[in-house]
Length: 300
Image (tube, rainbow, N blue to C red; front, side):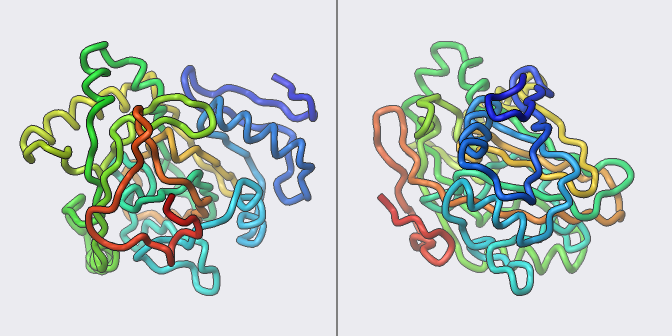
């Protein structure tokens, strides 16, 4: 499909994902182009821009077109001299091989995330992105009605992976150096489109009002709808690619299938709002602070 401003949108998945052709992200983008990219993001949830060859400054400039930027991470160190860029470095033990939505353990998770490939392995190292709105629509009516009423506590403090080496162990120690626990609605209403999506993923550890066993069982069932193959797009990286995805209505996963080969991406995230559930109730802090040093958005 060709847009009114002249670039092309090519779908790459049946339910999620599109490549944007004919846009040079290193150039000064016209506001009309940015508006159309945002519209494409809302429709397709994840956008791939091939062979952009941006540097750090260019990635920051592009991400800032969609709102204020967060710091790199609430607990993990940024790229040196770039406080808003998180290095996703396989050699440092940063292997996000669990389905998750970025930084949902704080009250205002990011609106959107950009990932830029710098070093990619010759095989493996892809990124999978799932459409959580499609997952919600797939739920049987009784399960959907239950999900509408559930709240989940998200936290960064849990054993999500066994460290594979000392670098990975040190990364985990930094990751949990401050504990955050936040209650979010299991079904989040998208603030721009009004779509409902399952807002869970790896950081969602328990359900409010339920014990750990029941929580695990229900979260596993709901999560299985998110990760159905038809709801997923697989991004195969080449150096210089940039992916923009809507963090409010997707999950992602990076398979740990490239051995000891190097893989380096840089992540920049756009600040988001406080999630709202079906009844309009908003997320609340259970433990920790409002992460004001991470996100510029004040809790609403």
